[in-house]
Length: 444
Ligand code: GFB
Image 1 (cartoon, rainbow, N blue to C red):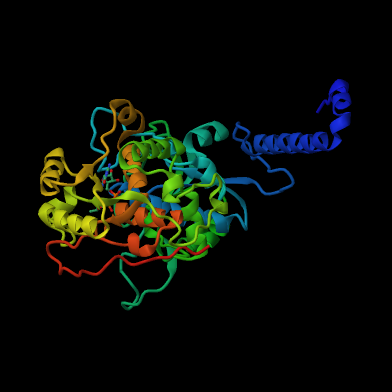
Image 2: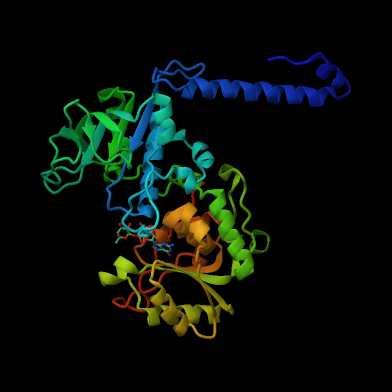
């Protein structure tokens, strides 16, 4: 690295500043070199500087039927699996592109091959475990190929003597796999919409246990460079509710561009800003540790009213629109508020009905401009809704909905009191004092 003479001379009078600048420059340079070595494309085994272990890649996918917010939960299980694997080898988590979700119904756009950066802050994820997008994986390894595709499944015979115990065995596949070997010996099937992608090998693994059960399997039984864990939801959380669980959750931040849109809506319609609401967001999640109850929230109630398949299947947790409206009005009066923000997957006709029931109050819902919807799609709009809900003074969710669960967590991470957060509508099939959602306090 060349440091010019004139630059050094100019710095004479400000030696300390120069020294600091020099150290920073060298550090940045070294980090860049390290990154280049770690992620150099070409397919050869790359070594991390000062580390003799080869680079390995963990990919994963989830049951196609699962929704956006359960998938976020599965991410946490896998991220913490990688955390444990890093104690043994030099692993990187490859983020499975988003798409083809049952609930993402907008048909005027192609919702596949979506990188995580569209929805989440990838730099924040990286502060917990090393992650890369699938597109980067292709660039680094030279092709969209996976060495080992491991399909998790349950035990055909069920639990041993009706008893649950942790266990794991390679077995014949319970069902005919949708991934099939072609004439070239490549396993083809759905790899997030990348038709060129394939696996070199495919096996089924019966498992009953937490994600960490896979550590010996991935370090001893399989030594391939890249491994994909499919149906990853089969493996449970290692540390549910404990500090490592929360670290993974805290790192799973919404993308800044989506938060900004939500913030603009709060400011324009709901008289809500971070300064007034006492909900500051620090750049690095590791430095955020708000005191529970420190957040005040904007002067509005937010609700998440899950409809669509929930309402159609007559789940007992679903409140009818008049019943939900009665609950909202009662709370608005109690908290002396006028505004309610409604996040919902309901059709416009149902939202209009709800507005009629809430006459006399100010009812808001987020309708994305065409440009926002085209760019960030149904997933992005869902996140904007969640972000606005996360900043309300009081929140009411829908029982059993993972969409609501993620809002409960988000509010805790912003410093809201659990009483202002862990609330839900009682369904028509439930008593008036139905059981509230379970509280999982953040552990730092
Ligand atoms: O997120 P999610 O897994 O939550 O699935 P549940 C619901 C999806 O519906 C979201 C849309 O990801 C959104 O695309 N959606 C729901 C919403 N509520 C809202 C909302 O308030 N605003 C916006 N913009 N979109 C589970 C599913 O859903 O329900 C399972 O994961 C299954 O696959 C089960 O269908 C019955 O946990 O509520």
